[in-house]
Length: 253
Image (cartoon, rainbow, N blue to C red):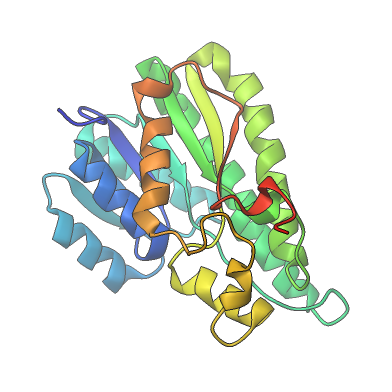
């Protein structure tokens, strides 16, 4: 038996990186999955690779409330219910505060924070009607500690922490749990590019002093997300889970 047998999950940003890993791992654990993204060709390839019995792809811009409604409808039409939402879609822009274009700042907030809020809002009726569910919001270590050049990203990820806690308070009586996951360095194109920009050509400076001195494989984050999606975490809500190789555990000297 899989950890997620019988569950139906909607996963945003599922065309690549951690979202792709989440979709594959959820399906391997017995879930049926709908992945959304704006990268249609890549997203459809992921869904085709998992198989139509277990996965569907929908075009989904998380900043658009109407597209959220359509993604939820597509999930209900395909699999009859929505048990899990993984708010994974996110973008990163690197620039000092004094040099960042305000439009770029707003774009990061819209995708990472407003998109997460819209997602929670969109799935509540279906989850409540089914008697409950689990929402997992993907934040970041930058939701705990700011980083130079990542003012927009850090602001959005700090915001996801507050949103998670408030939503957990509101939705607990409906049987809906809401938690956040805070990855550190992960072997995805976005994370590696950020590490290279911040610490050098190969990103090795990020690993200095790290108790587990490597980047995570995406599936290592997916396993934690799957636990929070499953009934094994039935008494867990409003909580924050670091998966950072120990980066924030101490000063590293």
